[in-house]
Length: 291
Image 1 (tube, rainbow, N blue to C red):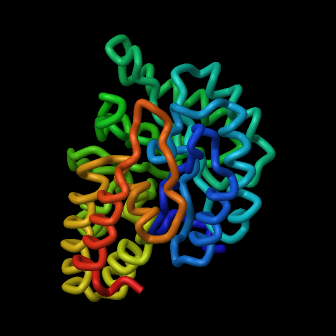
Image 2: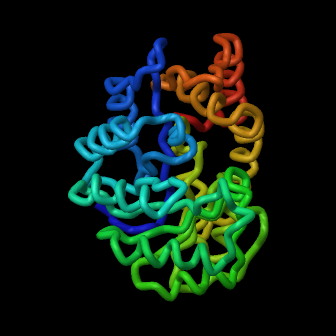
Image 3: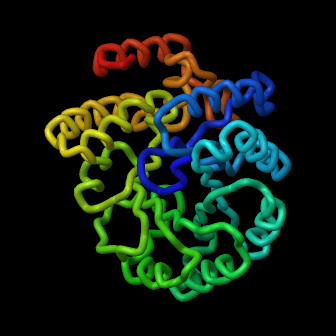
C-alpha cells in the first residue's frame, strides 16, 4: 500500500436503504470498486458520508466494514467531527485498535463565537496527546463557519502528531512545508497542485475516480496542459452534480455510474430517476474518455 498523503482520496458516501438503515452490502460493493481503482485512499466518516446523521454504533461498524476491505491496501482516513474534547476522547478510545492511518479532525463550531484561536490550538494539542493516529486538520468553513488563519495552522504544524490538512476554504494561505495539504474540492485540484498540495479529498472521486486521478497523474508527470484540460472537465461536472445538489448529487452520480448511492437520511432528499439519468448523460457528454 502507498501509505501516504499523496494522490486522490474519495470522501465516501454511506448508502442507506429505503427505511434509512445503513446499506452495508451496498457499502461493501462500493468499497470493492474503490479497492480496484487508482485512488490512494478513502476518507471514512466525512461530510459526504453524512457523518452528523450517523449513530455512534453505526460509525464504528462503518469503519470496521471499510477496514475489512481496504486496510493494508489503501490509506484510511477517519473523520472526527464532534463538539467537545470529551467526545473526541471517547471516540478515539473506541477506534484505538482499528487499522486507521489518519484522523481528520474538524474543530468544534456550534459555540464558535466563544472560541479563540488559542482555544482551538489547545483542542488539537489535547487530541494530539491522546491519539495513536497522525492527525489532519479539517478546515471547512462552508460547514463550520470557522476558517483557521495561516498562523494557527502553522502553529499546529509544529506538533509532531499533526501532519496535514484538508483545506476546503477559498482563502489562499502560506502553509508550513511540514504539512501535507489536500484540497477539498476537485475544482481547485490543479491550482492547489501548483501551490505544492500533495493531492485532494474530492467528492468527484466517489463516482468518477479516474478523472481526478488523471488530473493528478498528468500534473505529476509534467503534462500540465492535459491536466488543465481535465481540470476544466472536472469543474463542469462538479457544477452540474455536487455543486448543484451536494451529497444528493454525488449519490445520484454513483447510481448513474453503477455504484450504490442509495437513499439519504431526511431531511436530505435523493434526486429523481430523471435527474439521475440526466447526470448519467452529462457524464457521458462531458467526459467521453470515461472507461
